[in-house]
Length: 98
Ligand code: NFA
Image (cartoon, rainbow, N blue to C red):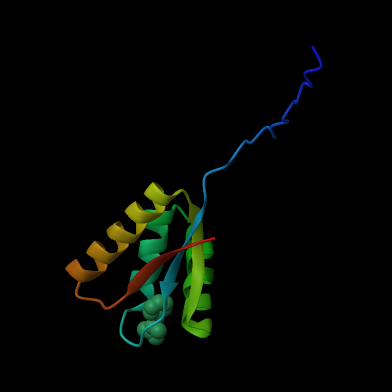
């Protein structure tokens, strides 16, 4: 009867969840070995990887220590901040959307 069919195409959207960088910040007081210990304990790095990243933070001011989903990143930040506070070190750990 003269009607015209209209087909709207839909993109197959496979949206991946956003990722978050977890970063450590340098300070003048937290002992180097404490930072290395944190990187081994909470980020599963071996000693030489942990030492290398600690030195990067020390020299550059900060470094990305891992990239995670929101929930995992948030857990890492909380674990690091709690552990540093319990040991009375001023170490700061933050997260940022990638
Ligand atoms: N800058 C600290 C020191 O000289 C070491 C450190 C490294 C602190 C990385 C925080 C992060 N004792």
